[in-house]
Amino acid sequence: MLLKTFGWSFAVTALGLVAAAFYGGWTAFGIVAILAILEISLSFDNAVVNAGILKKMNAFWQKIFLTVGVLIAVFGMRLVFPVVIVAISAKMGPIEAVDLALNNKDRYQELVTDAHPAIAAFGGMFLLMIFLDFIFEDRDIQWLRWIERPLAKLGKVDMLSVCIALIVLLITSFTFATQAHQHGGGHADKAQTVLIAGIAGLITYMIVGGLSGYFEDKLEEEEEREHEEEEEAARSGKQKPAIVLAGQAAFFMFLYLEVLDASFSFDGVIGAFAITNDIVLMALGLGIGAMYVRSLTVYLVRQGTLDDYVYLEHGAHYAIGALAVILMITIQYEINEVITGLVGVILIAWSFWSSVRRNRALAASGEGTDEKAEVSSGV
Image (cartoon, rainbow, N blue to C red; front, side, top):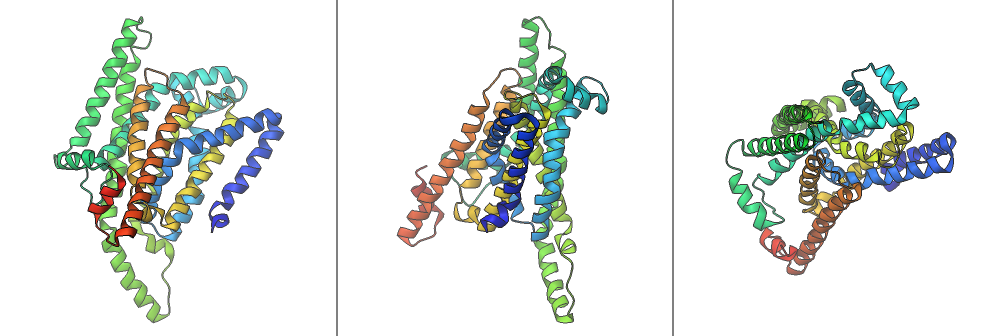
């Protein structure tokens, strides 16, 4: 099971490290290894959240997530995305941007860093909406009840998460413009860019999340109908193709997963420049890390980990909220990537331990009530 799920990740790791060694010797080998570890540590919460969505999809779409999805994640976000950002920000063609990335690495890094406020605003708003929609939803199982119970009541107010996200964006943009003006106005014009990028992130979430949510609501009805069709097909000796069984719901959830992964990758791509400005090493290291994140997602689904450790999804969403706040702060201030990674790891580890305590208490009491589970979690 482990080898089957992580086999491709192991293979890509070996090929990536060998390619790095041929490309730049042992120094490049070490840089790629460090980048892979950085990507995994920053994206573990991504895997947990992805697993919560992926478990609703059939085996066919899980396989698509590990194949086509990996191509989008590795080549799209870890290689093409930084080049596109440079091309847009520097107003140059894609070929010129690639040439710049390969032959003038310092200037390339400068341009990507210069575009960071817009990137952080877009990704920060997208992730913030994910966190707010989660925290405002009334759930049968609650982890930090003293926070989640009152927020679930507030969540009954229509469009509350959108209002809060817009307020955060306005405050961030205003603060950025004010401080830029106080320091000579060198970046004052970027305040508008931050505002536009943040609104674009919000719109992207509402469109993609709305579509996936719409089809997710219909998924149960579709599954019931498909189950009947499968029984009919079995009686007639014919089998319905998996791609038809997947349906529109799975497609839009897959699209949502890709946009979600893109938002998670922003901090990894930007943080990678603290280690190297070589686009080849960056793509190798972050690509290896992305493979493990995807394999871990599938492993969590197939092992039923989220069902056994019910607070993991909560911890991952709190980590998303923390990452969203960190991204918005980095528009103006620099935050070490180690801190970003540790915040997520600590929150997920805490939620995992709470889940373990809950399971132990339920096993000892022999009762499966949520009330006993919450007491046992110590929150």
